[in-house]
Amino acid sequence: MKALSVVVPCYNSENYMKHCLDSLLVGGTDIEIIIVNDGSTDQTATIAQQYQERFSTVIKVIHQENGGHGMAVTSGIRQATGRYIKIVDSDDWVDAEALHSVLTFINNQSEMNEVDLIINNYVYEKVGARYKKRIHYASALPVNREFSWDEVKLPVGKYLLMHALIYHRSVLQKSKLTLPKHTFYVDNLYAFEPLPFVKKMYYLDVDLYRYFIGRNDQSVNEQVMIARIDQQLFVNRRMIDFYTNLPEIDNDQRNYMRQYLEIITTVSSVLLIKEGSVENLAKKATLWKYIAEQNHPLYRELRKSLIGYSVNLPGKTGRYTVIGVYRVLQKIYGFN
Image (tube, rainbow, N blue to C red; front, side, top):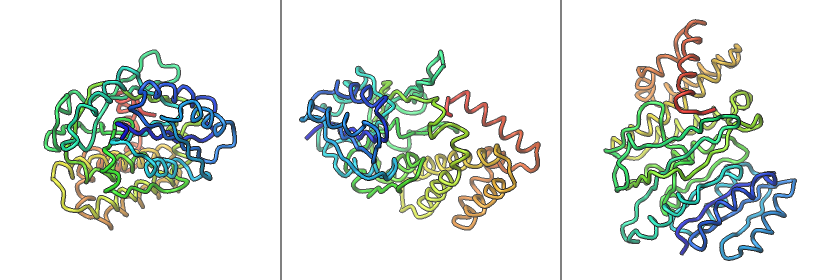
């Protein structure tokens, strides 16, 4: 069994997928690379086949009709055979030294006592930025040892993105994770819905994931997110529903999931406020009404938090205030 399966969703990725794949091939035979060609119309399929022919013991290719990022991730997970699974988008890449550290850790574990989740750092490779923002968790998580949810001390505004996560394959199997088709921002579901099955974690303080950001057409571009706000809201509501129907889990684990949901709801609210139309301000009100109707205790907890209070301040002054807070968080954490 391979130590690590890496799923690489590809849609019209001919211009950058080679850099991604080459960075992963450094892992040698310990790694399984699953390229999912999601109905591309350029040379993506040809490039994928060429890599599979050259590295047949490492690379496998899935060709499917276009179903979006979520369907590509789901397809890759279902074909994965490694002990652990990592998602690497085709315009991103990994650091060679850090990848070796991850593989060494996996291989040195006892198969009878493997952790459920390995956490790594990631770096924003932002177009035009002289300083590359490094997201690490050294002040919030125990370093280089196993731990549980009672030791997770993430501050408000900082959470575990998909780029930081390496799940044990059994966690994804137990969660029965199926991401929606033709929907953006499903990476939040990937980083949220398997968490009830995560009990043991290990934080490797290595800068593994290099997150390329800054193209005008990227899904995380602020204007693109506003244009696709209905998809953001769809994901947000699914997270609310999932949280509402959680089984009995550790209180610290539940608190982290509520904090994550708070951040996603804040992003949705701020984007609607920034656009500022009557229609989108009504959508913000509808979102918060939905939370109140689905889970009133959750609504009360979110509304009394500083962020929840801020995004619901009335009038133009309130809207300017929350946008200002949002800008500060952008500078601190480097998103968008």
